[in-house]
Image 1 (cartoon, each protein chain N blue to C red):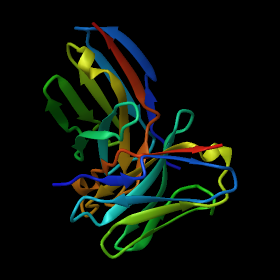
Image 2 (image 1 turned 60 degrees about the vertical axis):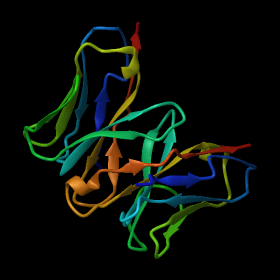
Image 3 (image 1 turned 120 degrees about the vertical axis):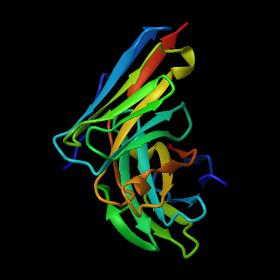
Image 4 (image 1 turned 90 degrees about the vertical axis):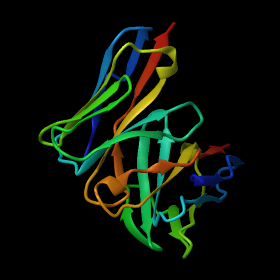
Length: 115
Length: 111
């Protein structure tokens, strides 16, 4: 069974640019969540998509957005990049259909560096 | 706002020692998960606990969920260098994919 695949693994962008990250969940998982990980703040929840609908949202500015396609693949977009957006962006997939179904399986992450 | 306080933040011990990591909150969680993360990689799920008072064992690792489902602990017996890494607890409310993470415990086990 294939795991969660995130692309690209590494990205370097300039301030003001925008970026799109991609995530393919485990087959059969309908929930995809995105997290930002930084040394100072740890892992922070960005948003969750379930069956193509945003089901939960964290406390991030509107520059952070996402979407989910009918095959459950998800993309995350960050517009007008700031230096503080440099982080490891993690995607997690889960069944999210029961208490044990909240177990999250993470991809390897995308390391975004904003210069 | 739900928060998970994880302690200690850093732990450096000798091979063979025992250790306990704590995860505490004032909020009730429907389930709690423990993950281990290596540098540059995504977290890997170790265990999920859903019932208050539940105890789960994974070889030398013992996980416990508090009776009130507000806290959890991870105990490692006879730590080995291979246990080195970042340990994260994460709580879920309801059946959604949203997880609240603790700040993490960086464990270093010296041979």
